[in-house]
Image (tube, rainbow, N blue to C red; front, side):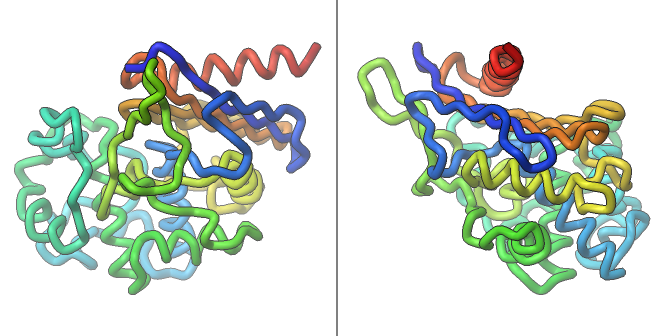
Length: 288
């Protein structure tokens, strides 16, 4: 926990920035960890591969990962309808590094054989489901996850591929600080789990991606299915939180508006709440 916090907010209408504010631990260029907003970028890569007919929403994951249960489909994973657990039981109990130390190989060896035992729950929000989508993307595209998302989502948005990175422990990202000024390291997200909570970019980069891809026919157009967004027309959103940070992104299909906010510090695990509050406050001030 940090007694202090910092927020970044950016609002754009049809690509034109109307509000942009950065707190003490943020700036315009340095990437931030986007936590579960990463799922939007992962689902955009899924949609891109669907557009190439590599698979469709009803395709069984087993077509790409032969040890996976046949009832798991791509669309169910995107929309959290698979019945998979949120994460592995041991991750639920690990508050320090639940997503660190993974690779595609270790995920295939240690997780996929356990999937039948991790299914059968009422449909719930699942990081595990998105880690599984990462492996589908990698096998279908013959590219590592980060390269696939850069190739199919970032570059087509008119942005350099290296503007997107993974929020590993040593990544160059904005970080919270303690009352003594010590850096508070957030969770390091590795391997397929990056698809669920591990992408990083600057706030303007994410705003540009969402603006481009949430337009009609785009990879994140909320009118397309399977839909990763939360909310209802015309306003859709997604949020996320790590240990020392959190975020929210929103898209309004009626106005072409896109808003992103990121927070560092504050009580652990509440960064998405801080980000949403900062966004609402900035919009109110911007209207005066």
